[in-house]
Length: 128
Picture 1 (spheres, one colour):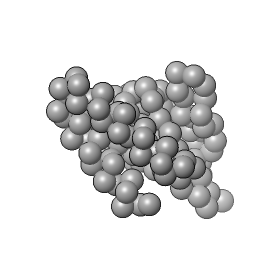
Picture 2 (cartoon, rainbow, N blue to C red; picture 1 turned 90 degrees about the horizontal axis):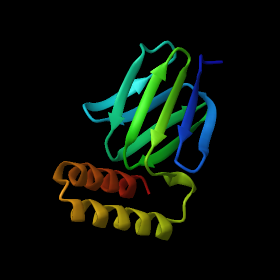
Picture 3 (cartoon, rainbow, N blue to C red; picture 1 turned 60 degrees about the vertical axis):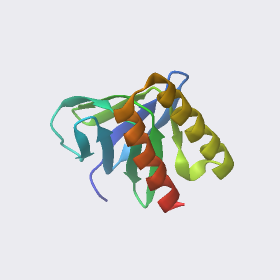
């Protein structure tokens, strides 16, 4: 069995995921980075994008609008402003969520976040 670490995805409402992960790819503001067991401590802000979390034989694709990631000894916690598991959602609901986020970012004139969101949307559509 592969070595694991505790992974938690926390939204403002509740803990969305709490499970033993083998690997997590995170969309940090300075670029994507991969967390493996024994990863050095790190705190980073998140940009809109996709988290790919590997749990044994399954990989969950999770959209995050933004937030923080805290990588510590044996645990990685993502505090997401807004998130949803792409693989588990109804495609129409996912499309509606992404359109609402894109509209909100457009209203804020956050060009960089909007660019990241558009890349995440293209990534989600390519997977689906």
